[in-house]
Image (tube, rainbow, N blue to C red; front, side, top):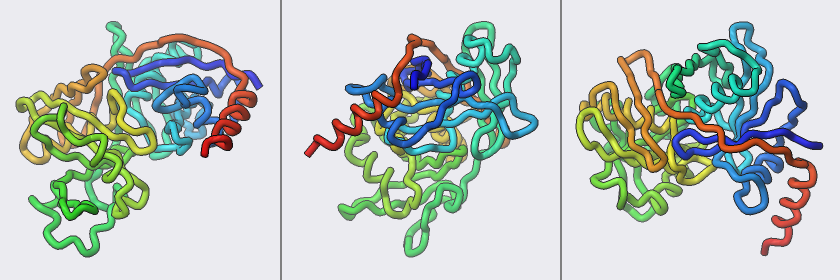
Length: 297
């Protein structure tokens, strides 16, 4: 089966975007992994699938699959690319658009400058909202519910803020984001047994009250050049801790995102870029990918 696809990125966070409205798309974990593989497939942090909605107030349904094949709740950078894709492909001229995700509805607006603003939906902070098990934690939470101490396997610990923006996030403050142990501590936090559905691990450096630098080790994808929901989570966590004021400029390794939060409405603004379009034989690609996996010792 031949699939048409578009390669896009939002501040360096890259995607394979698929039109499930005008062509039949049956996504499986194996197909997602094959497409996302950077050596044997197209290559992407996540896959975005645009479908007809089931919700009566939505224009489209928008689904996200990580590079490891798992389906996740939301992707902020992907949401901006979704809007650009829908407009460029002529699927709709509506602006703003309403998109159905697995946790509800989000609103997205493309400006004349080409940037996209996404109303990111509900923000939550309870441990249950990020599937975090608190039983047995001795000295947590700190500062009411804004900071928790997470014990690490080596006997050390990190203080984290828990934020759910559809996706679950654990945000910590670091002195220098460039030297932060993202590659080593990131995967430990992501798969920590207290997070029963894994977590996105954010490392935030506060520059001033309206500016941060951020790196995120994403659940199922590893470190990406930018994470939209991660940028939102970091900004919200900083504001709740009294370290930041809205709006917050979030400098990621892939570009700049702007987050505005008034305690209720959460909005993210940033770029969305189309790189190229193509076609791929998904069955042949997946077969080759699985053979490669089987041959790997």
